[in-house]
Length: 422
Image 1: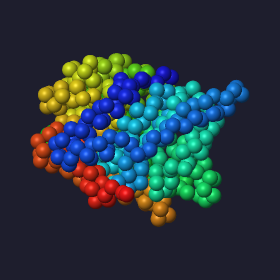
Image 2: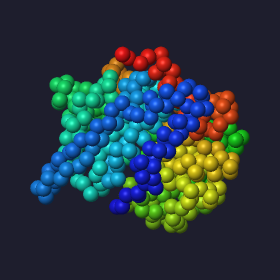
Image 3: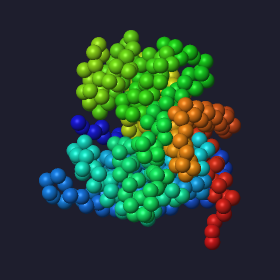
């Protein structure tokens, strides 16, 4: 199965993030010195990962771990396996994690990791070897109170189990709190699987409320029907919304009267794609973005809402499931259109919020029921949504700028209180 290529290259993505941070520093007037501090990550590690392949050959992969800022707490961020992953992309994502944790008021800083590989071409043994060697290479800079990895694009609970076991073997004791997103049987939190998608759905729901629209019957299009997009669609469907279109890396399907989301999830599990779903018409990714819907959920990869695609967008609300799905030039057009954007660092923060709860449970050797986990997560996200809306009013800026302003203020306050040592 082909992987959908990012619309933004790593250096372009990094430039986007830095531009937004600089604007936030200027709006909040925290001082240019803070921008100089924040534009460089504390640690950028590049490692080579030699792996014995199934045919007996040895192939060397490149891996990264970037730690951006830990003024508010230990570094936190996922690990992605993707063929185009590079240092600039991972750096940009690490920075976004700093601000994502701050906007939801979690006691974490930001980090990110990645390995340049195509997981769809690798078997289970090869993935395990890559994971264990990569973990060994970064083991010195991660740890329960230093840097806590998690899943990201094309990594999952099994990959996190291998990472946890490798780290535990290195330090000589079982250390479940070194990583989140683990299988529940190994200390993973109940509710982690659906957390990010539910958070995106909550963002859409709160935006719909803010616009005085009812949830019943509103039309939703979901770009990217992986873990995040499928759970967002499932929750919105259960709340009475009409999910009319979804896409994956192979294509998109559309049914104006609404898709049966649980049946579609089962169809994709069985066939590996949303294409061919009974009663749904095949459309292109761009056609999905341009459908006449109230809510659009981009939950694929960065940069899909860009200068080429933004003009045709008709949605009134965009709740961003992916990291960086909207480019800066597209942002300006969305503002002119009056689209209510729930930005990525707020909308998809459900995952890191439940990751935080998992970490707390592991440190205390406790186990919370799913209802408690998701209820606590919802309260956190609704409060963060209200904080962002309040910041938008305070500085008279759009929601994305407000989210960055709020998070930059929080990070800079921590830096100021800690001081610069020595």
